[in-house]
Length: 430
Picture 1 (cartoon, rainbow, N blue to C red):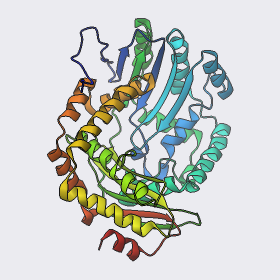
Picture 2: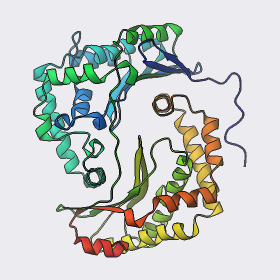
Picture 3: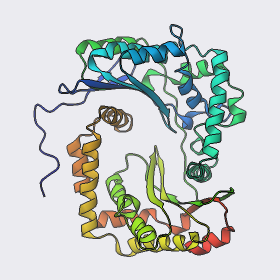
Picture 4: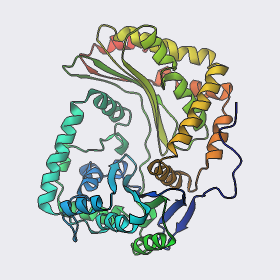
């Protein structure tokens, strides 16, 4: 089989980094063959940084940056982005918030100015805050009505109970109700600091574009970055009654933290177990037994901690049989490991997926920013390929034995749930 990655060429584009005097980092990669570019402002400030009384404030701030600045109304911001053909969006996670846009390179100066206006000059008008609070409360209700999201929230709230990591990104009605425009503005001034901010730029741009970004963000006042709280996984069991047709089940185990040396073996294990139609869980539970439509495994990594597990949605009558089959599949991997054909197929699949994703400027921009925040340097395609190539049958088996500790297993169910003892018996838990 031909190699998916070749030896680096001297003319291959490279990720470069500029560190400003105030500590802010700009990572950029010029791809001269493209007409478009993607620009992202990444702040290492998410729900994991929030004090209890301000739960949900990072996500609230993300919404409010689109609701008008000292120079433009919300409608004018939207119209100005449309005028340059730009796509603009944002998202909040447990550990960071990102504001980004994609546009043609010739329009980058205008798009960057708009994004910076949002970032530095948002007005946090009280009337707009009140309106957007209602929008977020509706968003919370939407999640409550989406059982696959709800079972995930129930699980992570339980396994990280007592830690900020266990709180919902959207917050609670009681915390959101107390937030004012001044509350949001003050939180930004204290938590949006240069030392926890990364600017990521990929595609078609000029040296003048870079110099302009460095000038604008170089004006930020240098101050210490917020400290992230240490968090630890603990086994949990949660049941939530909800009058819906299917039961939504999630099984979880302690996983690997972000950047762990065994992360490539973990990704291979996860793919073989439950990612895709050829995975063991999909074949055993859905194809061979017809018990469900959706089943998959996942791996979630955070700073210093992580979790992995299995999700399935199915009828109450067949859920216990499905859980017994899931236990059977996991135990087979624990006992025998995976096969050589599974290993080689999965490594090729994962490497191909990486290559295809990096053809998107937005995806490439995101990858560069995350690599800078986690590793402090770019991770090349060749390095990733070598990481997967180094995965062996033994390394996958060792990770499986480390991860799938049934004594530390967690379980969450949403729907017409049974008694806890019935689920534990089906899974062989005490």
